[in-house]
Image (cartoon, rainbow, N blue to C red):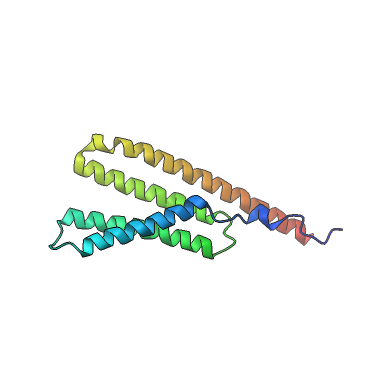
Length: 145
């Protein structure tokens, strides 16, 4: 009987995605720039602009927090991918709805394509996470025997 687990940690624990780190850096940078722009406005912004700035700052910080959490916490077993998928679906849906409400339903058309792409990313992330979970469960059953 072999005392080793029969797998290498690299098979289950992946490094931090460069794309997610780039999204986190871009999100933080964008949020900081928009917050600076908002803070240096000489007068009060129109309501819609204030809501848009607040939403963009929130979205940027959400990506930055996810990237920092992903870099800090290991192993994640693809939870970061699922969360990123949910963020993509939520933010593209919110942006598409806001665009359609402000500029009309035809203006939201391209956003529907982005929502579809975000849903595909989410479905693939959940599938990958479920596959990893089943591998972990199989390895735990194998180790318990």
